[in-house]
Length: 435
Image (tube, rainbow, N blue to C red):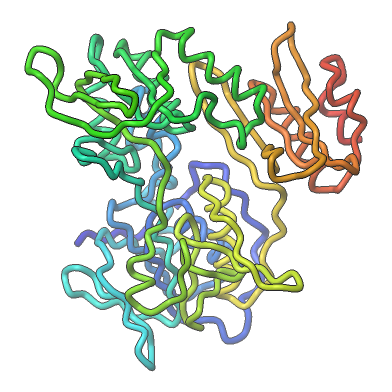
């Protein structure tokens, strides 16, 4: 079990000005999970003036950023040092102990709660924060264990060794991760085949028009796309590739490696074993509070409970910024302080040298009466806006148009009613859209 004491943020994680620590705050906090949610919580605790003991249990050692795993890190343009969320010195400067070990159980019996590590060590704390993240969803088909997922640095290292010129890669799932892996494979000279049951993936995320444009990029870069679902992965002939993916329509794909990118499931094992409320995620309040008063949770493993006249559970958020926000909110909750104000949800992705961003919601199916407004560049959809029946802007997505998305976010957060003709007009400066 390795330990460090160190943080300076690599990723652009916003933090508020330090405030005084609330009366009655804990003397010791233990965070379980070294992803961006756990890191953000540790960073926020110190930014808010918390001066007590702070331990971060991170199985992989110093926390690192995961989005680059399917982008620059997989391509080899970023190394392990560059994707660290903070250098080792930061933890020392901020009095944060990093324990490179895996948590085995929580002890929530009356008294001071504790985390039991796999080596038997027990870490007691006044407050525990679970930031256990999510696990890749596996293929529940014969031979499904032959497919590899991309969730950790170790996964990316193993996949990078396979992505060599001439290698054949089958990617099951053409969403964000699958598309990024296919893009990296093509850039590295491998032959990639994308398999997805949906003809045009990502429509709920970016709208139909942009989804069509993005999906068409695959064939333009030599990546084959198949509409279908795998039913088995078998051992292939020695001279034809080690894997044979059988599809429901009878087709087959031969590959040197099969990658699966069909989503994630929340890692609630620790929480459920300890008796915490969980329903497709650890159930938390907006401040990260769980069903136990000494335990908080944040990140991909959580599902927020809202009370708007009636109590309901929100859908889980699985994007980078959502994890950052939940870590910050949980830190505030631990200190008994108000959570930061957050704007509309936002995410980004990269493929074939283009940058995609979206804010708010672009899922027109969930909003009766909503319509899409397109902004084109040279006859090609460059941005799409989802406008409610009453004229409010609900969401926006764009390709290589970051200023448009930034303006759209301001419009959404302020509840403004934009002129749809100005949204659609490419000659209108995006910086003026929110005025």
